[in-house]
Length: 118
Length: 232
Image (cartoon, each protein chain N blue to C red):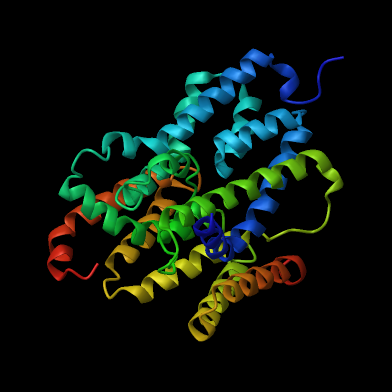
């Protein structure tokens, strides 16, 4: 009998190599900035500027990244996402309670996609 | 010892949204790997050492497509390129952290980064231990989730549809907090607009690297006016 899953088609050595390469690539993206700018060297002014400014740009990028598969054209036309994000924003501006805003927003979204926009 | 306990206590509440998101997404990964015939050993290995949600899901489709080490390596760099921005942003913040630093770097994810760069730390709490526990707790949620998924497999069949929105909500709230913490909204606007523009130009699966390039370009062009206003 031939194996049923992806795993069955590969030898253990192949899997070790494959996962090794993915681990290496992933960790490289994490460690590279710290290797290029080690602690005993002065960080260039431009990089310091980036370090100050990037966090404020990345979070916006991550929000878009989370919503990347949402379609305006196909139903439900991004409505669950739009409504939930609006409610999160209002709730957070009003109560300033991080866990309430996140929990309330996620719960609302689940209700919307499970019961309203099914 | 007390310093560490205080740091853990201060760190935990910040990780609660990630706890929910990682347990569920981790379980989804475990279920997927289980359905492809992988044992707990591989699930555990991937979740401990790759520890990058979207990459781990991509790994499964890469393996299904055939054995191509070079292709897998390049794909990994592309999917995880956004980590480069996290490292650059944390160069100063993680300085002088000694033996904890390698782990802090090794366990950087979208969610850990977003908490580390935005959480207010009480004055008496040791920063490096605070960051360490944020990182360790998030990492352990991910591992636990994927193990639960791997063990229970498809038995886990309650309706969790939409629960991953908890991570979207986390980023939205952090965005609001950041927005209110500064008068200079240009960086946030650059990030959002670049990502939206590139999402429409390059499609859902290929827009992060173009977004990063666009962000770098715009931020570089805006450098002197922003440094002059000195409100960052």
